[in-house]
Image (cartoon, rainbow, N blue to C red; front, side, top):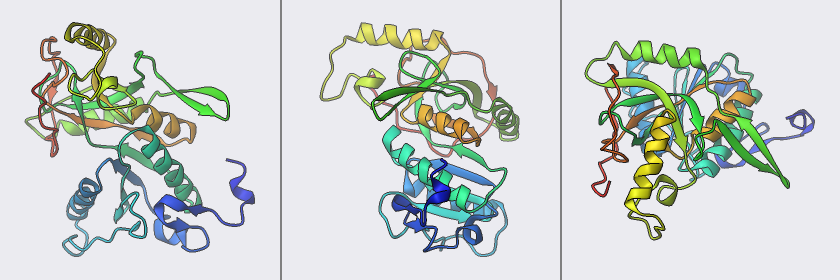
Length: 279
């Protein structure tokens, strides 16, 4: 954004941070990895895990929420790892990412890798599998994110870093007892109708029509469904961030009748969404 350099002050409203109120280079200048996920509690637990794995001083129980002045997002730091919640859905993650990317810019961070972690609905894969996204697709199975800018619809690419995906897949083989695979992730605008669920307040389709749609998604390479990946991929790509989105899946809740592809047994998931029996 060329306008940033001419601003007297940049206030990151939803993170409760700013260029005049905080020394951002001192606070974040040596950050190398940013991990983002939906739940504040999960991201706090993840930061505590990183604190332990990195062998940092203390037990990590007293990690402070850097965004404590706001109730929109939570942010924790463990050495070079920043752990941030992004809420649910494209609007919520988009706001957080805009301010996070500006934060990294103002802090003069270099060579940062950003990874989005969390849960998703599996599509024709083994329960509890981890899907590493190679391409985020929309509800038409196309690798694009449509952003309305003023009165124009701007279409942006959602390709993610293939080398990073392969690195994560290789790393996952060090941890046994969990299938991990690379596949497409479908991003929808809501949890119910957009994902073909039958138990929302509204439902205008039959079980047969829903199953046909999800089979077509599977045939197009989709292996999991969630609500943030296209915005995440598009913003990371446009801003030159090395990004990836591995997701744990629930018990193939969308399409239990689909064939299960072969996959390697890799890393253990700490979080899986409960199965939804109506599927």
